[in-house]
Length: 122
Length: 122
Image (cartoon, rainbow over all chains, first blue to last red; front, side):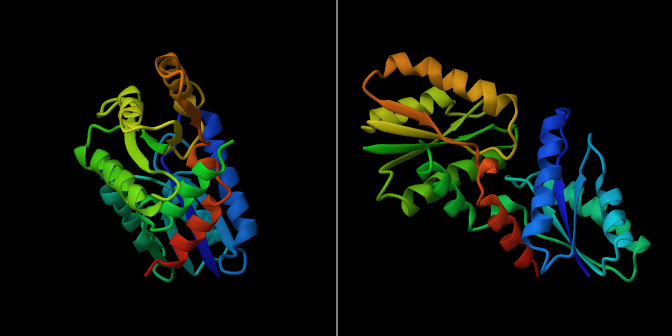
């Protein structure tokens, strides 16, 4: 089974973390054909932390996990911290393929999103 | 003329701010039919700050400005700070219509972006 782990920074503001959890839930409903398992994981401050999010995916039966950084800018978190944390979990799950997606700010689709959001402004 | 002001938080890391400026440049090339003017503006730390970004748009001839928050989560910055700063500039430009778009994390298109980014992972 394929899993998607939505990785966000984590906020002291509970509502921001809840938004990420809700987004992961929505993702689960919207891409269940390709990703049977979807969880959220936080870099810091909020729970589940990334290693716990990976464990949840594995416990649910994931053979393949794509970790998707919900970050707009490249930076230390995206370049260093997330890969370091993910890599530290690899030895725990030798039979699970774990890959890191580009952060969403790097997507060429971000342009469409920006234009569509601007155009929809009332 | 219509203007788009891409609003980001601003980072101590120059490269993150440069990414926002480059994104605004790309936007200028990709939506020039609808928005003849595109600038970036930062909430704090980096320049131009939001009021200076608005002034740039007006100086370029903007009659209408859409301020587009490049933020994933709702929160104090999106809910309070950006509207407060934008509203404080309104009396300076009584003949310019200035509207605030939803932050991009609120867009229903964010789902497509997440799925496409995950699927493109090698």
